[in-house]
Length: 349
Image (cartoon, rainbow, N blue to C red; front, side, top):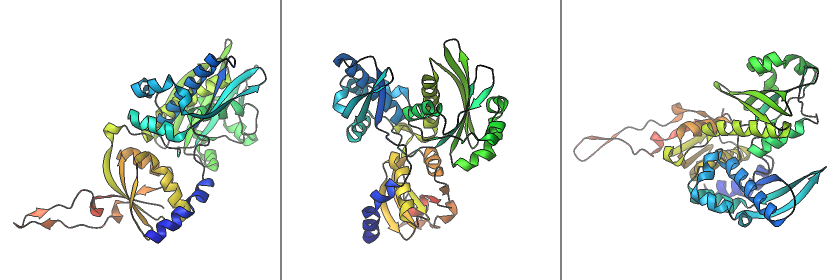
């Protein structure tokens, strides 16, 4: 076991570098009206609030007393910050210290969403001045606001190519009414969740309706903003809050149990599993051939959803058959709840 773990840990950094979790998870950009000290402090507070919401998936976390205190002194949680100007707009770019922020959230007792999150393929239609609609593709200028909004919410983003075939398929009627009709063409993008948005002008701003689905799970909503950038931030934050309900467990709903994952046949799978289990405080108990055994603090339904991002499925048939023993009086004694026979077994397909 020790030789295997040493080999795995020795190469872990290389494996992680080739993976695709949320990038720059602890980096936040906030618009500012100027570079005065008071405006900088206010922007740092807004940036830390954005990060807390990104890491927890919930605005309710901002009401926590420990987090409220941190928001009044946000400088202590930043590694560095600097100003960036694009045209007439100025923003403050902040790189927060992951260790300090994670310690804050643990002290506050709020659940944390790890960096491994469902990738969201977005079918986004913008209404033009002539009432036609245009699909936002990966290489188009309009895609910048979508990437900014997804990053703001901490969601990995996929965008379609918006080639002619996709433009013909993704009509306003389809995207607004039955976006699941795009499911077949969506499979080429290797995403976990789908988001369909129809955006229209609304006075001086824009408004949109949206639908999202992930397997049988579906949600929908509406949003409005002064421009496409504000609209995208609102929609992706709404979606992130909905997804967090599936992937982030509150401490009250968590329990301790044993997880056994079969089929960990290569280093890349070990590294991916390590990232997936990050929110559940995993402790590796045993590594035996292609099987890893962990002790976790987790909600089982949300753990199943998290493992499902990598295609790891429940495999109760792989659990060993454990027969009850007998006590000194000859009465049956059930095995301990955390024995391998009572553990949760999953496998890589």
